[in-house]
Length: 245
Image (cartoon, rainbow, N blue to C red; front, side):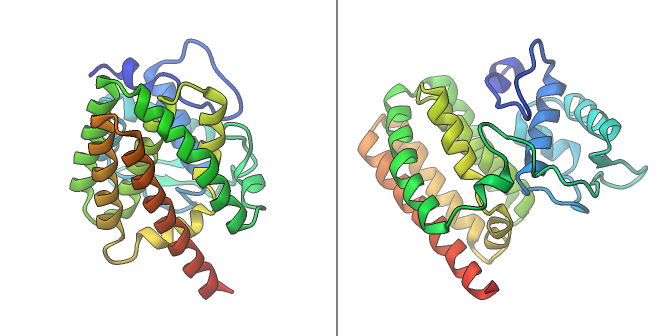
């Protein structure tokens, strides 16, 4: 599958950029992961091979993207070791409509209710519009998630690609941007939750169910599977917040 076909219509941090190369798009995706808190200062990036598999591009494209981010001071590259996220705060950058700092101000109950209201409608429309190319991408992402096993960071990066691939098929770019912002809510807690035993396995099983329903274009089954998935996210996040208080 060609990189251009996979990487088009990617939300750009801080505004759209025309005539982007594949490495520019991957650099934007990695910047987004830092801005949302999925990648934090000091985190090691997955290796080039793993990132290439998750993002479905070549290792050369990943290498070029890392060089771009190193030049901006977002990534620290050391000979003989994995690249690390630099001590940089990008939470003020808008991912689509809002920045992480804005989204995280909202109450967990309000965000969960919004996701149930908006996201379930988005995935229903996505189920009705689903195409073979997106199904193929989702199946590739499922395989990458399965191989990730308990590599939480690799799984989370793949998880974001999985969700966004579905959102984009709904056909409404505004709603896609809204649910993409909601997806990044309280990412610090999502990182902790996904590091718990069986968390990646449970999420993977949810994703398998979602893809099977999407392949049938069964919008009711897709909505039911997503509702269970969102409820799992809500409950694990709520439990972690309760411990933190």
